Amino acid sequence: MKQHVVLVGLPGSGKTTVGRLVADQLHAGFVDVDAILVRREGRPIDMIFAERGEGAFREMEQRETEAALANDPAVIAPGGGWAAQPGVLAAAKLRAFVIYLCSRPDTAAQRAVPEGTRPLLIGEDPVARMRRLFQEREPFYRDAHAHVVTDGKAPEQVASEVARLAQTKGGW
Image (tube, rainbow, N blue to C red; front, side, top):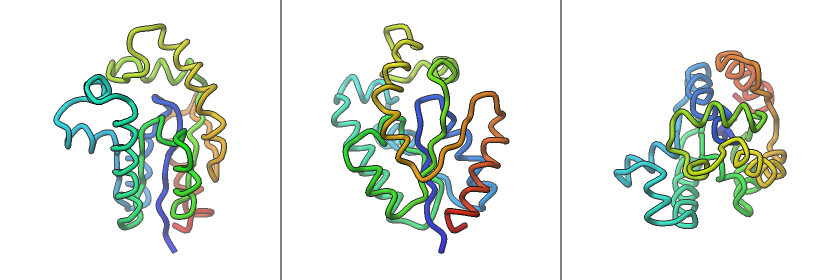
């Protein structure tokens, strides 16, 4: 039986880029939780953080991810901090095949910074901040069903690895 594929990892690890490619390969839907929240709120993530706070954002993110998990199997990309919220990863693992897109903090920061909309990377040295995020979140990410290293690989290569894992271990 098919189950969802949930991608977790640091901001800039490739969840959205790889997620779209994997969804195409699996002929599945793709759910970008951040994009849904931006559309629903009518403003970028950094503005939602500034106006409502991280706690409110995490609650909205959790509701959207839960809604996606309640629908037909799809590839789901929540924000980088979603998996570090208490209990969410364990609950998701009951209904989804969770894959950690592993990237070094400096690589993730380099990929994430050009967008300029990552609220937890704005206003200070993004590499230093990414290293702190990595230290805080990596123990949660490691609890995923599988891990795929993204450093030094093209998104298409990472997507092929993720799709292969989904097909062999995730029921696709």
